[in-house]
Image (cartoon, rainbow, N blue to C red; front, side, top):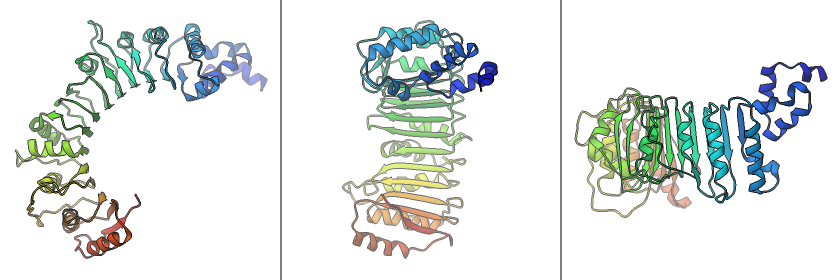
Amino acid sequence: MKDFFENAPDLVIDKILENLPIRMAAQTSVLSKQWRRAWLSLKVLSFDKNFWKEQKNSDWQKCSRIISNILLYHDGLVHKFDLSIPFDTSRDRMSHSQWISFLSKNGVREILISKPFSRMDITSYIFRCGEIVRLRLIGCSLNHPPTDFSGFPNLKHLELIGVHFNKPNVFRRLIENCKVLQTLHFFSCFGMDHVVVDLPCLQSLILIGELESLAFRNIRSLKSISLYSFESLTVETFDAVNLLANSCQLQSITFDGHLFKLFVAGGIKRSSSVTFNHLNELCLRSLSLGEFGVLRDLLSMIECCPYIMKLDISVTVRENVGQDIVEFNYNYKLDHLREVIISGITGSSAELKLVEYLLAISTVLENLFLKSGELGIESKLTMSSVLMGFPRASPKARLSFLAN
């Protein structure tokens, strides 16, 4: 064993150290001369929950000095920097600035910073990290980039959660010229009034939060889109629907009730030729089928997706607004739909008509899963007996109730 520690190849040492908590990696310096400074050239620096647990207290000043000393004596490139701070450090901003300044000069490729309990100001040094490939910020704030910032040429993955942009155009500057960006996920961020998605390599887009407007310019590689927003959002819907429908890459769409109504009214109803020929999964959230026009809009959306294999719908109960007369086109067939999930079902007439219609037009359907809302045993049994009587176009179709 002693010979192993004294003669282990550098690649083996690096791999061992990468899989150890940073404190334990530091303790390997006593093994031999070869190991003495090996941990100081770690390419992955992880100050995650395990690091804070090892400190056994929340003395931020002490922990901050430890991190600063590790970076001070670090020798070599840092490929990944993972910092997850579990308590308030709002009174110590100098160290944050120094750490990011260090990373900007050491070829960092991944930066993961989580600060959920008090906002961490990310200094402009972040915009100097020209080799960065992945950036995830949680509970941070971003200031305006320097005037000479021209984008992140290597950034492929951007995830922002609870991030505050101190100027309206910071987010636009952040993503512009990110020519290889593949995933863009942002949740409950602030200060992004107007967002234009012009990212030719983007494959996955998730937007959850409040915006004033959203527009698409170049999304030819998009495979998956999920949009959840408050009702203040406006979208250039006709352009957006056409771009999404004409994308040969798009395979999955998830919309909430507000976005769904916007896209149907602003695009699908305006053009009879809109068809999502490559879409295989459609998820629609918080649909109020009793609301006037919603069920008709849902049928319009389904009939624009002839090749979907999975349909996932969650319904909500709202007061009916007027009498909605819906004509069902039973001549239309879904020849690829294999799985349907309807959550929140209460047995309303609109819900039952939807189930009846889907069973009648889905020729290869295998499973229709139902998750009931607040229903008693008697109501569920009554609804089940009605559902079991519906004719089915697919001999394989099975109806099942799932536990909530």
